[in-house]
Image (cartoon, rainbow, N blue to C red; front, side, top):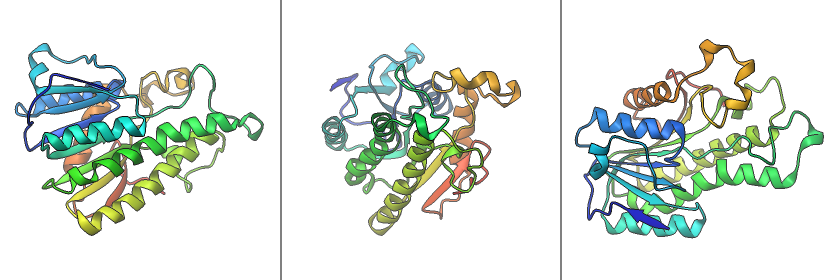
Length: 253
Protein backbone atom coordinates (compact mmCIF):
# COMPACT_ATOMS: atom_id res chain seq x y z
CA UNK A 1 0.00 0.00 0.00
CA UNK A 2 1.21 3.47 -0.87
CA UNK A 3 -0.13 6.92 -0.05
CA UNK A 4 0.60 9.98 -2.16
CA UNK A 5 0.07 13.68 -1.44
CA UNK A 6 -0.02 13.12 2.32
CA UNK A 7 -1.96 15.59 4.43
CA UNK A 8 -2.45 15.73 8.19
CA UNK A 9 -6.15 16.43 8.05
CA UNK A 10 -8.64 17.07 5.28
CA UNK A 11 -11.82 19.10 5.66
CA UNK A 12 -14.83 17.95 7.62
CA UNK A 13 -16.65 17.45 4.33
CA UNK A 14 -14.17 15.17 2.62
CA UNK A 15 -15.27 12.62 0.03
CA UNK A 16 -13.84 9.11 -0.15
CA UNK A 17 -13.96 7.56 -3.63
CA UNK A 18 -13.00 3.90 -3.84
CA UNK A 19 -12.19 2.33 -7.19
CA UNK A 20 -11.02 5.78 -8.24
CA UNK A 21 -9.34 4.77 -11.48
CA UNK A 22 -12.63 3.79 -13.16
CA UNK A 23 -14.07 6.06 -15.85
CA UNK A 24 -17.04 7.19 -13.75
CA UNK A 25 -14.93 7.70 -10.62
CA UNK A 26 -12.48 9.90 -12.51
CA UNK A 27 -15.33 12.14 -13.64
CA UNK A 28 -16.78 12.12 -10.12
CA UNK A 29 -13.51 13.45 -8.73
CA UNK A 30 -13.35 16.24 -11.30
CA UNK A 31 -17.00 17.13 -10.83
CA UNK A 32 -16.75 17.24 -7.04
CA UNK A 33 -13.69 19.49 -7.25
CA UNK A 34 -15.45 21.77 -9.72
CA UNK A 35 -18.71 22.07 -7.79
CA UNK A 36 -17.15 22.67 -4.38
CA UNK A 37 -13.97 24.74 -4.32
CA UNK A 38 -13.34 23.61 -0.74
CA UNK A 39 -13.88 19.91 -1.43
CA UNK A 40 -11.18 17.46 -0.43
CA UNK A 41 -11.02 14.03 -2.04
CA UNK A 42 -9.45 10.81 -0.82
CA UNK A 43 -9.13 8.52 -3.84
CA UNK A 44 -8.33 4.82 -3.51
CA UNK A 45 -7.30 2.74 -6.50
CA UNK A 46 -4.85 0.11 -7.69
CA UNK A 47 -3.01 2.94 -9.45
CA UNK A 48 -1.89 6.23 -7.91
CA UNK A 49 -2.23 8.07 -11.20
CA UNK A 50 -5.35 10.15 -11.53
CA UNK A 51 -6.58 12.32 -14.34
CA UNK A 52 -7.74 15.58 -12.82
CA UNK A 53 -6.81 19.27 -13.12
CA UNK A 54 -3.23 19.90 -11.97
CA UNK A 55 -4.40 22.89 -9.99
CA UNK A 56 -6.46 20.51 -7.82
CA UNK A 57 -3.66 18.15 -6.82
CA UNK A 58 -3.39 19.64 -3.33
CA UNK A 59 -7.05 18.75 -2.78
CA UNK A 60 -6.73 15.07 -3.71
CA UNK A 61 -5.02 12.42 -1.65
CA UNK A 62 -4.36 9.24 -3.62
CA UNK A 63 -3.90 5.95 -1.80
CA UNK A 64 -2.92 2.75 -3.56
CA UNK A 65 -4.62 -0.51 -2.60
CA UNK A 66 -4.73 -4.10 -3.83
CA UNK A 67 -8.17 -4.39 -2.16
CA UNK A 68 -7.12 -7.23 0.12
CA UNK A 69 -8.64 -7.03 3.59
CA UNK A 70 -5.20 -6.26 4.99
CA UNK A 71 -4.89 -3.27 2.66
CA UNK A 72 -8.37 -2.05 3.54
CA UNK A 73 -7.58 -2.29 7.26
CA UNK A 74 -4.35 -0.34 6.76
CA UNK A 75 -6.09 2.42 4.81
CA UNK A 76 -8.88 2.69 7.37
CA UNK A 77 -6.17 3.12 10.01
CA UNK A 78 -4.55 5.93 8.01
CA UNK A 79 -7.88 7.72 7.62
CA UNK A 80 -8.64 7.32 11.32
CA UNK A 81 -5.26 8.80 12.26
CA UNK A 82 -5.99 11.79 10.04
CA UNK A 83 -9.27 12.28 11.93
CA UNK A 84 -11.24 12.51 8.71
CA UNK A 85 -14.97 13.02 8.58
CA UNK A 86 -16.62 12.11 5.31
CA UNK A 87 -19.77 13.54 3.76
CA UNK A 88 -19.71 10.90 1.03
CA UNK A 89 -18.17 7.47 0.56
CA UNK A 90 -18.61 6.24 -3.01
CA UNK A 91 -17.59 2.67 -3.84
CA UNK A 92 -17.09 2.25 -7.58
CA UNK A 93 -15.40 -1.16 -7.70
CA UNK A 94 -16.90 -3.55 -10.23
CA UNK A 95 -16.22 -6.28 -12.75
CA UNK A 96 -18.35 -7.79 -15.51
CA UNK A 97 -15.71 -9.57 -17.57
CA UNK A 98 -11.97 -9.87 -18.04
CA UNK A 99 -9.56 -11.63 -20.38
CA UNK A 100 -10.51 -14.99 -18.86
CA UNK A 101 -14.32 -14.88 -18.79
CA UNK A 102 -17.44 -13.14 -20.10
CA UNK A 103 -21.00 -13.03 -18.74
CA UNK A 104 -22.55 -16.48 -18.89
CA UNK A 105 -25.39 -17.06 -21.35
CA UNK A 106 -26.30 -20.48 -19.95
CA UNK A 107 -25.81 -22.73 -16.91
CA UNK A 108 -23.29 -24.73 -18.91
CA UNK A 109 -20.91 -21.74 -18.97
CA UNK A 110 -20.76 -21.30 -15.20
CA UNK A 111 -17.30 -21.76 -13.66
CA UNK A 112 -16.90 -21.65 -9.87
CA UNK A 113 -13.62 -19.71 -10.03
CA UNK A 114 -15.28 -17.00 -12.12
CA UNK A 115 -18.28 -16.85 -9.79
CA UNK A 116 -15.99 -16.38 -6.81
CA UNK A 117 -13.93 -13.65 -8.49
CA UNK A 118 -16.98 -11.64 -9.54
CA UNK A 119 -18.50 -12.04 -6.09
CA UNK A 120 -15.26 -10.96 -4.45
CA UNK A 121 -14.96 -7.75 -6.43
CA UNK A 122 -18.61 -6.75 -6.74
CA UNK A 123 -19.97 -7.79 -3.33
CA UNK A 124 -17.29 -8.74 -0.82
CA UNK A 125 -14.84 -5.85 -1.31
CA UNK A 126 -17.51 -3.13 -0.88
CA UNK A 127 -18.71 -4.91 2.26
CA UNK A 128 -15.19 -5.02 3.70
CA UNK A 129 -14.91 -1.26 3.21
CA UNK A 130 -18.19 -0.72 5.05
CA UNK A 131 -16.95 -3.03 7.82
CA UNK A 132 -13.63 -1.31 8.41
CA UNK A 133 -14.81 2.27 7.86
CA UNK A 134 -17.50 1.99 10.53
CA UNK A 135 -15.39 3.47 13.38
CA UNK A 136 -14.66 6.49 11.17
CA UNK A 137 -18.14 6.98 9.73
CA UNK A 138 -19.74 6.66 13.16
CA UNK A 139 -18.02 9.94 14.04
CA UNK A 140 -19.14 11.75 10.89
CA UNK A 141 -21.98 14.24 11.24
CA UNK A 142 -23.89 13.18 8.13
CA UNK A 143 -22.60 10.68 5.61
CA UNK A 144 -23.97 8.81 2.60
CA UNK A 145 -22.34 5.54 1.57
CA UNK A 146 -22.98 4.78 -2.09
CA UNK A 147 -22.18 1.46 -3.75
CA UNK A 148 -22.49 0.89 -7.47
CA UNK A 149 -25.14 -1.77 -8.02
CA UNK A 150 -27.07 -2.56 -11.23
CA UNK A 151 -30.62 -3.14 -12.33
CA UNK A 152 -29.63 -6.64 -13.48
CA UNK A 153 -29.13 -7.42 -9.78
CA UNK A 154 -32.87 -7.00 -9.23
CA UNK A 155 -34.57 -10.35 -8.64
CA UNK A 156 -37.98 -8.90 -9.49
CA UNK A 157 -36.73 -7.34 -12.73
CA UNK A 158 -34.89 -10.43 -14.02
CA UNK A 159 -36.84 -11.49 -17.09
CA UNK A 160 -34.04 -12.58 -19.42
CA UNK A 161 -31.82 -14.75 -17.23
CA UNK A 162 -28.16 -15.29 -18.02
CA UNK A 163 -25.26 -13.23 -16.66
CA UNK A 164 -25.29 -15.52 -13.65
CA UNK A 165 -22.20 -14.28 -11.81
CA UNK A 166 -22.83 -10.58 -12.39
CA UNK A 167 -26.53 -10.73 -11.49
CA UNK A 168 -25.83 -12.80 -8.39
CA UNK A 169 -22.99 -10.54 -7.25
CA UNK A 170 -25.12 -7.41 -7.48
CA UNK A 171 -28.04 -9.11 -5.71
CA UNK A 172 -25.59 -10.19 -2.99
CA UNK A 173 -24.22 -6.65 -2.76
CA UNK A 174 -27.74 -5.31 -2.31
CA UNK A 175 -28.47 -7.70 0.55
CA UNK A 176 -25.12 -7.10 2.24
CA UNK A 177 -25.64 -3.33 2.10
CA UNK A 178 -29.19 -3.75 3.41
CA UNK A 179 -27.94 -5.62 6.46
CA UNK A 180 -25.11 -3.12 6.93
CA UNK A 181 -27.53 -0.20 6.78
CA UNK A 182 -29.64 -1.76 9.53
CA UNK A 183 -26.59 -2.30 11.74
CA UNK A 184 -25.33 1.24 11.12
CA UNK A 185 -28.76 2.66 11.99
CA UNK A 186 -28.43 1.32 15.53
CA UNK A 187 -25.23 3.18 16.38
CA UNK A 188 -24.72 5.64 13.53
CA UNK A 189 -28.13 6.78 12.36
CA UNK A 190 -26.59 9.72 10.54
CA UNK A 191 -25.01 7.34 7.99
CA UNK A 192 -27.27 6.45 5.09
CA UNK A 193 -26.80 4.02 2.23
CA UNK A 194 -27.53 4.26 -1.49
CA UNK A 195 -27.28 1.53 -4.10
CA UNK A 196 -26.82 3.26 -7.45
CA UNK A 197 -27.70 1.91 -10.89
CA UNK A 198 -25.71 4.05 -13.36
CA UNK A 199 -27.32 2.77 -16.53
CA UNK A 200 -25.35 1.53 -19.53
CA UNK A 201 -22.17 3.59 -19.56
CA UNK A 202 -19.39 3.95 -22.13
CA UNK A 203 -16.60 2.32 -20.16
CA UNK A 204 -14.22 -0.61 -20.20
CA UNK A 205 -16.73 -2.62 -18.17
CA UNK A 206 -19.55 -2.42 -20.72
CA UNK A 207 -17.74 -1.64 -23.99
CA UNK A 208 -17.84 -5.21 -25.40
CA UNK A 209 -21.63 -5.23 -25.11
CA UNK A 210 -22.54 -1.76 -26.41
CA UNK A 211 -23.14 -2.82 -30.01
CA UNK A 212 -26.54 -4.24 -29.04
CA UNK A 213 -27.59 -1.09 -27.12
CA UNK A 214 -29.27 1.91 -28.73
CA UNK A 215 -26.90 4.88 -28.87
CA UNK A 216 -29.34 7.12 -27.05
CA UNK A 217 -29.34 4.64 -24.15
CA UNK A 218 -25.56 4.78 -23.66
CA UNK A 219 -24.32 7.34 -21.15
CA UNK A 220 -20.93 8.98 -21.02
CA UNK A 221 -19.09 8.78 -17.67
CA UNK A 222 -19.33 12.55 -17.21
CA UNK A 223 -23.11 12.42 -17.42
CA UNK A 224 -23.31 9.51 -14.98
CA UNK A 225 -21.15 11.42 -12.49
CA UNK A 226 -23.53 14.38 -12.75
CA UNK A 227 -26.56 12.11 -12.37
CA UNK A 228 -25.11 10.49 -9.25
CA UNK A 229 -24.38 13.80 -7.55
CA UNK A 230 -27.93 14.95 -8.30
CA UNK A 231 -29.35 11.70 -6.91
CA UNK A 232 -27.35 12.13 -3.70
CA UNK A 233 -28.39 15.77 -3.38
CA UNK A 234 -32.09 14.89 -3.69
CA UNK A 235 -32.37 11.54 -1.92
CA UNK A 236 -34.69 10.96 1.04
CA UNK A 237 -32.41 11.44 4.03
CA UNK A 238 -34.84 9.60 6.31
CA UNK A 239 -34.26 6.25 4.58
CA UNK A 240 -31.58 3.84 5.79
CA UNK A 241 -31.08 2.45 2.29
CA UNK A 242 -32.35 3.29 -1.19
CA UNK A 243 -31.83 1.47 -4.49
CA UNK A 244 -31.90 4.26 -7.05
CA UNK A 245 -31.32 4.55 -10.78
CA UNK A 246 -29.44 7.34 -12.54
CA UNK A 247 -32.69 9.33 -12.90
CA UNK A 248 -33.51 9.13 -9.19
CA UNK A 249 -36.25 6.52 -9.62
CA UNK A 250 -36.37 3.54 -7.30
CA UNK A 251 -35.24 0.18 -8.69
CA UNK A 252 -37.20 -2.95 -7.81
CA UNK A 253 -35.46 -5.34 -5.43
